[in-house]
Length: 172
Image (cartoon, one colour):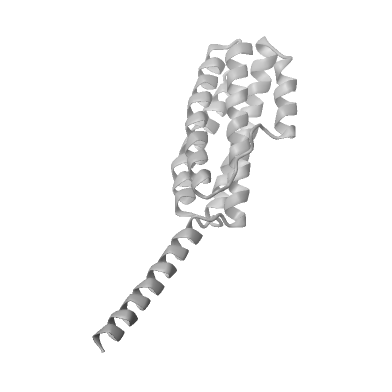
């Protein structure tokens, strides 16, 4: 009788541990909204870094170069955080920016000085506004808690960048 109770207890414990492990495994899997957000955020973040590096080289105004340096640092850090989360969720990140973003980078790489500065500032306003909307809209749809935390921590930085870019535009 004791042996039967022990076997039943072990069976129940095994069933619960298997169910718990399955729940943990599913918690790390990405939903479609999680994956969509990760891919768009990664593409935008990589673009910001590339454009920032280009602005450090091709820009003329000191405020543009300082801002660009901040973009490389902040978006580089955010990209690393997102990469870590995506890895845990088994979501492979793109290796390079999208064709659309690469076309913009290529176009801007042919500019320099005042022309570059003006286009860079306009592009930063556009990109950060787009990113703000992506983060705000995605917050309600992503299911992974680490992604939600990433959005909550990164969105204020994106908004700050947007305001900085708008100020640069007004002080041409």
